[in-house]
Every structure is written in structure tokens, then in C-alpha cells.
Length: 609
Image (cartoon, rainbow, N blue to C red; front, side, top):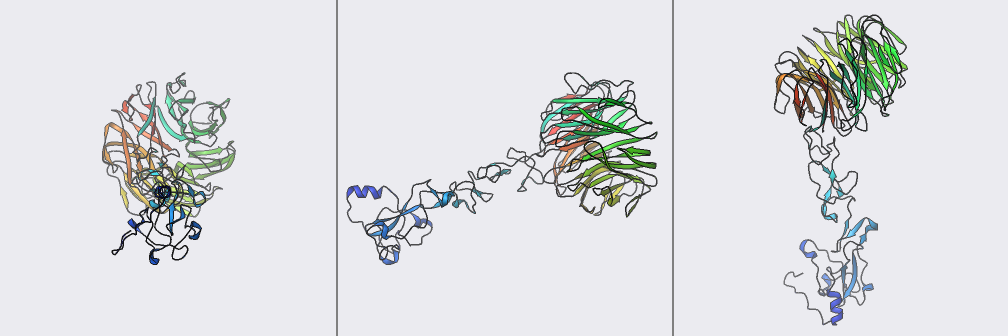
């Protein structure tokens, strides 16, 4: 290094063999000299012996043998004595250093191996520091991470997550980019009869999907043979399981001479499906016939992972009873929600309602009662949605007219029907209740609990609705809505969803990052934030994904010339959405045109996150 006119002294003549030896390796500046930038260049000459530039060995950095020189600062350099001066020999690259945590770079520095902590790239052998780890690549893509399953290796962020917030409220698709709800698979089931629809859906840890609903005629969900016609031109309830690719696993129909439908399903960690609905005629389940006591009874049961029925039960008297929602507590107990009139004994717990009341019940995995409570008003109430939080408390939504009293909370409807949201503790006691509504009817149709503990409610509004931050007013006809409340029932945010026609939101599911997927139907055209969606004719189904603050992520419309609707949605751990509903005509979900067999057919749709 030359500075202020100084010149490097020419080395004394060396034996050729010696010269070859030391000129064939690389040396750094003398020991003890602080250098930066370009001054770290290697030299292959003996260095100036001026004391102010000399190393620290011997007298003023002078030496006769390497042992006269000071110990090196790291394992990547070795002291050498050249022409009487101490210098550093850079160890060959890739030699282990720092007790195995790093490797030598061949320039005298101990750099970190991939997977070890770093602040900047020059600390890393690869030259890349990402997610505070030395990484095998820059790893600066939208949905890439270096601190995943194999620390130090750049890999895609798992589907359904977005740890760096790069997807504008959405999630990553597991392929290194943000998802937009791409089509994964879709199925259509029907035989030409009308009234076939998927009404509830659940997904288990292995990606299998369980669908509950109704069908008339036969339902060809099984390639080996359709579910049978119950007779009389009426609808039967069905339960069907599809594998992660949409292939048939098992299916069963329930009903006989009159109308039955299954409106609720939940699946536990063992793959057992609890389901419920209503029946007007006898149902064969778990090896025996169950006969309703009156015009319409609630029925519920459980089917094992292989499709074998474990148990089943009816609940009701001579009046009308129906179950509309099911959920599971973290401990595996079953929550059921619905509506009843008259006397209702559910799993041994008697309830009485002078008018139509809502009901919430908690059962064990074997169907035994834990508790059951009526949610009744002076003129009528219904429970349409139920969910559990991590403590096993129940969150409930529906609608009521008149006055609804839950514990210390007395709710009074402001117009027609108002929606309510309530929390019950693990023993079924009311914790709090909130009502929302004004003119017209407001109905809570589904509810979910986010990982954060927030409560998400969706439903319909044909008037005005204020959750606390300002009124949501129907744009025309009936609109949908989505509202997020905190754990105590206070509003975080809310959005109206609709335009001039009749629009509804019927289902909601929450992903691991608190983002939402909501489904329903719309008429005419609507813009949820991603551009105008136009109906193909009649009502069309829609799927809408929102960030945890309500920002638009993606929205898709699916429809035919007839009336179509999405009734329910579930999400898996990877953020994929599974949707069920009904279509009447030809529709393309993204995998090619599917055509109903005549009337309305059941559809099941899988979308990427």
C-alpha cells in the first residue's frame, strides 16, 4: 500500500524455492495495522519495516521465526515471518472457524455458514443475509423466507401465511408468490331434480372435505352409485366426504317420505363428522330408524372417519325444530345451534319455548349432554351461527324480534328483526350480548372466531345497520355485511357488501393470519373492491377474501343463466378455501365448464389461498 510518497521496499533476494513457497500463498498487511476498504488488498512482498507500520511481533513487528509474532485474531489467518517482518497468511477457503459456526473465506475473514445469525451479508459466506440468517440466496422475493423449515435455505412462505405483509392483506400461495384465490378443483353433483344444494362444509387436517346439504331424486356423488331417492318428490339430507383432490371417499343420504336437510357440519381431529339439520319424516341412522315427534324435528349425529355412523338422535315435539349450525370446542365437545318451538329435549336437556326461540347446546363427542340453553325473546328468535373460542366459550349469532334477555343484557329490536351476537361461557352462562339494527330486517347468518380472538359476523341487512363506527345502509334491496368485533363485542371494523339487487352473505371462515373469506350471492353487478363483478343471469355466487382490516384481497363471481349461490365456506391450515352451494346451468369455476343436470346441482369448489 503506497501512502504520502512512501514506497514499498524491494524484497531481498530469496532462494527460488523459498520465493516460490511464499509467493504462491496470500498475505495480509502486517500484524497490528488497522486498515479499511481497498487497503485490505493482499500483498506478496515483504512490507515496510518502519515502526509505525510494523506488526506486533518481536521488536516493532520484527521476527526471525513465526513464533515471534503475536497470535492471530481468528482461525482464518496464520502468522508468518517474511524477511524479518510479521505478516498474516490467509487460510484456505472453506476451513471451519468460530467453533464450527463459520468458515474461512480465503481472505482472512471468518464468515458465517448458512443458517447462522447475521446483520449484513458481508458476515455470510454466501454474501446474503435474509430474515436475520445467512442465506443461500438473496431471498428477497415477495413470498420467500430463509427462516423456515430449513434455516439458511431460501424457500417459499407456506400457503396461507404472509409474515412480511407483502401481499396487501392477502396470503402467500406456497409457490413463492401472493395468492389470488386460484382454482384448485371443482365438482358438480346432481341428477336433474331441483332443490339440490350444499349447505355446510368442513375441512380436516388432512385436507379432506365434508359437505352437508339436501338433495331431491338421487345424488351421484359416488361414482359407484348415487345416493337413493327417498321417494315422494321430497328432499333428503346428505353427508359426503371428498379427499384433498375432490375424489369421493364416502357419502350417505338421510330421509324417507318427506323433506329433510342437513345444514350443519363440523369435523374433529379424528376425522369424525358431527352434523345436524331437520327432518319431517323418519331417518335411518346408526342402525335404527328415528321418527319425528311432530311436523319437523331437529336431528343430529356423528359419522366416523371411515363413514360408519357412530350415533344419531332426534329432538322435538309436535312443533317445529331445526338445527342450523355446528362447531367444535378445543377439547372436542360439540356445539349445536338452531331454533325450536314448544318443548325440546336435546340430549336429555328439556327446554320450553312459547314462541320460536333460539337454542344452543353443548354435547360430548359421544353425544351426551353438557348443557343446553334457550335464547328466547318476547316474540321470536333464531340461532343461525355458532363458534367456539380457544377457551371453549360459545359465540352465537342470529336474529330476534321484540325483547331478548341474556343474563344482564336486555336487547330490544329497533325495526323488524335485529341481529344479535352473544358470548356464553364454557358452562353455557351468558357473558355478554349485543344487538344491531334499525329499520328493516338485519340477520346474523354465520359467525367465526379469529386466531387473535376477534369475533367475525356476517349476514344480511335490508335497512340500516350500525356496529358503532357509522351506519351501513342497504344500497338497494337486501345487502350483505361483514363485521369484526373484539372479544368483548366492541366493533373493530364493518363493511356493507352489496349493490342495487338482492345480495347476501351466508358463510365466513378465518385464516391463520386473521384474514377472512366470505361467501354468498349477488344480483346485477357489484364491486367489492377489486373491480366490477357482473351476474351471468339471475343471482350468482361469489367468494370474497379480505385482509384482517377489511381491505380487499380477491373476489370472484361464479354463475350461470339461472340462480346460483354459495352457502358455506371453510379454510384449511394452508389458507385454501373450500366452498359449497348450488348452481342452475353452466358455470366455469376456473377448471372448465360444468353443467347442472337440470335443476340446481350441488357444487364443491377448492381455491388456493
